[in-house]
Image 1 (cartoon, rainbow, N blue to C red):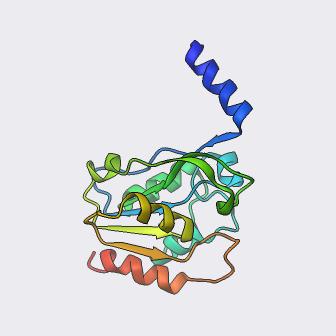
Image 2: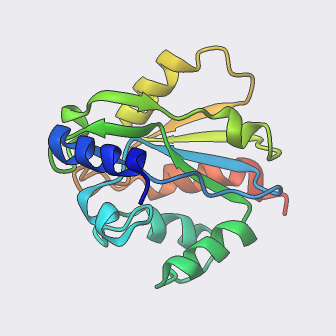
Length: 174
């Protein structure tokens, strides 16, 4: 182990800094869906929307008439096949549990990584915190952006129809 890796591990434990995941995309991704930061359950399974109570996978897979994939590998395959990129606005932060309102001392995703390598036609912001951070840090972005209600179980509103409408902006012509 390198000394820098050990120092980072010690820093993370001492400061309660949590790390998100890297972006999931490929050269064919057409939609970029941005959340806020992975929940505790997502961090446990080490992939996006890992809480089975979160409506994300059910909503997006349902739009395409598909069942929710069980494994991370199958979810990655679904995203690639359906030309969807995923990431979170926050790449690391201090957070209490899964509460977006407790996010502090955070680093913002460098969206250029995805936008410079995929033909993104639409950005969907999953929830209020993702929208707040995106609007503050990327106010001049030229790609169309839609802010949608969170799919989190903390949001009791079922916004499946709104999500399907947003997805149809890009995918109804396929």
